[in-house]
Amino acid sequence: MIIKTEKSIPANEITDPQVFHRRRQMIKAMFAGALLPSSACFNTALAGSDSRVWNDLPKGPFSTDTAAVTPKNLVENYTNYYEFSFNKEDSTELAQSLRTERWSVRIEGEVEKPGEYFLEDIIAKQTLKEYVYRFRCVEAWSMVVPWVGFPLVDLIKQAQPLSNAKFVKFTSVYQPDTMPKQRIKAMLDWPYVEGLRIDEATHPLTILAVGMYGEVLPKQNGAPLRLVVPWKYGFKSIKAIVKIEFLKRAPMTTWQAFAPNEYGFYANVNPSVPHPRWSQASERRLGSGLFAPRRQTELFNGYGEQVAAMYSDLDLRHFF
Amino acid sequence: MCIRNNNAWTVASIVCLLPLFWLLFDIAYGQLGGNPIQAIHMRLGDWALRFLWITLAITPIQTMTKWRGMADYRQMFGLYAFFYASLHVLGYLFVDHGGVWKLIAIDILESAYIWFGVVAYIIVLLLAITSPNTAKKRMGKNWKKLHRLIYYAAAASIVHYFWQLKGNLLQPLFYLTIIVFLLGFRVIVWMKNRRLSQLMIPKGKVISLEDSD
Figure 1 (cartoon, rainbow over the protein chains, first blue to last red):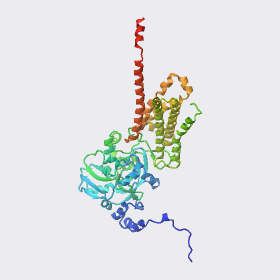
Figure 2 (cartoon, chains in turn brown, orange):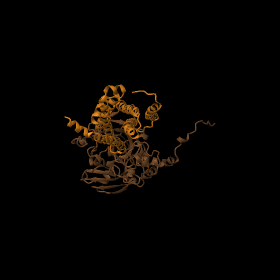
Figure 3 (cartoon, rainbow over the protein chains, first blue to last red):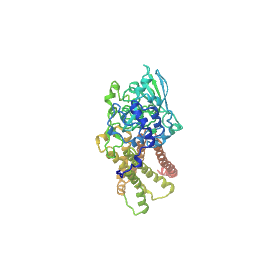
């Protein structure tokens, strides 16, 4: 006798056929392929699907407590992406026009292997992991984001920098036809430029992210490739990277050029060095509720144990 | 403050509360985005600034339209500027910083833009306290002197607005343009009056007085 149960599966719980047909690819990518998602899988994801691409990725070292993660919709709708808008909420929609297909990254300067590499080829050689990091903006708000990415040092090793490569310069995409503020040459010098000292760039905390919350990086959050340097203010974590250069001298970065007395090259999170116009002593954690108190900001955003040694001989007040 | 049985006045004073109801509605329905506390803060600050600007616009409008009897409205708008500025300050102290005085002290000391906000608020507070007609009568000539400080409050509040931004200055520039017009109008009127009064000095008589010595 067949006993019929009353419950039928509601439509919204039925797996999307696209995802269903991709399951083998995804499983293959995650287990058989030794945790390397195949570039085919990545391409399908880039084609505009918004479901999870990476499930249960291993956690990167130094990942913080997953329970503290900021709700996804807040992170996706609160971005400083000045190429699109000076309004954090507006860039969500505006950024959707960015063209990210067939993305390539130029590697130049003091390296053995300069050249232009397709992003999918770069990713195919990397082991993706989930990095749950605190993110502290220079505007005194913060969040916790589960990035999907790989250590920058792994890419640097493949590029084989020469011994006189002391700094790494990153350049964002210049796409004035999709980026309104580039088109009207508003405020900053475009394209956006950031930089790190070579020891900062090769530090295991520093990652290049291609996703977050198990999904491909949304365009407003820096797709298809962004830097994440969790112990520095958010503006160091440059979005939509098209060029990585190895240099003998420190590059002039965008915010530093705009206001050298307000934004330094280092931009390490430091509660005891206020911005010339506002305090950095405390921060508002997004998604913490209307009556949650502000948090005390921690030196190096709480990553002091990992990074403080790099700055032991540096006057942090002077090199802010 | 004098309460009047005037329909237009009553309607106007209720309309001035709409931004507050709008804000409460947005709070209740979670319409304030990823950083609601900052959104509340900016909304209240914006309305304080707008009411201050409206208050300063009354005299030029009165002069141009020759429509008297707007002084009551000027008082009301001024008090609403004080009302929204107070909510802005209370929100900063007790919502954003949870009334933790040590945190507040550090924040104010280290944030130059807040100093200008403090100056603007102290002035608006003084003006609100001395707003009732009884105070006006008791203070005599000093009342007008004190209430001229509103120009300093306007200047301080716009610096307060400019200095917290990273550089996207379109909105504060809009407010700055308006205040330049409003204050510029007063300067023109003042210069005109001065020239008129110079013309009206009866020079002949002065000479004749000297002669009679």
